[in-house]
Structures are given as C-alpha cells and as structure tokens.
View 1 (cartoon, helix red, strand yellow):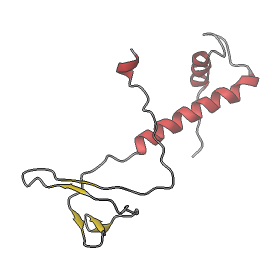
View 2 (tube, one colour):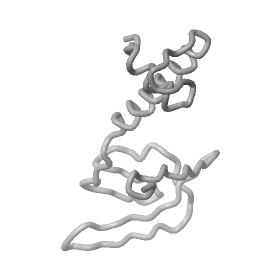
View 3 (spheres, helix red, strand yellow):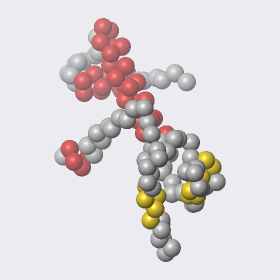
Length: 118
C-alpha cells in the first residue's frame, strides 16, 4: 500500500526540518526530500509497533549432549560449549544462562526517552 501524505503534513515536516518557515509552501526541489523524511519516520514507527512483546518460556529442557528445547521446540541457534548457569526457583521463575555463538554482534544504543530529553 503506497504511503500518502497531505500538504499539511509535508509543510509541517518541512518547517520541522528547517526547509521553510511557518506559512511558506515547500519548493518543488525540496518536496521529495521532505517526503522521504516522512516515509522514514513512518517506517520507523511501524517497525517499533511490529516488534512482538517478549514472552517468558513455559519450559526449558536441557538434554544430555547440549540440546535445548524451549517450550518443546529445539532452540534454533548454535549454543557454545560453555558451562550453563541454571538457577532453579521452585516458587517462581527459574533462569538459564548460556552462551550463543554468532558471526557478528551489534549493540545499539537506545534512543533517549522523552522524559530523559526534557
């Protein structure tokens, strides 16, 4: 479905970006750049909305040889042959700490929340 923006949205974004001042119209040469900024903003919002809420596993089974089942399904990633730390809590949530293998790791700095930026 193609994204559509009203002239008011485009003008407001252009003012926010400093392309024009309030009450001016967006010059044609800048219109595509402003629309691109609106598209990226909308896509970023869609990505945040589509992220599923993390859920707690109902059951984790560690089998001899290192196979791990999460809620009856095999864990889909390779687990390193490192010791696992297992914390059993019969009265609440138990924990399993293990080492995952990856070809690359990227750590993203979270965007400051609205409360932090004020």
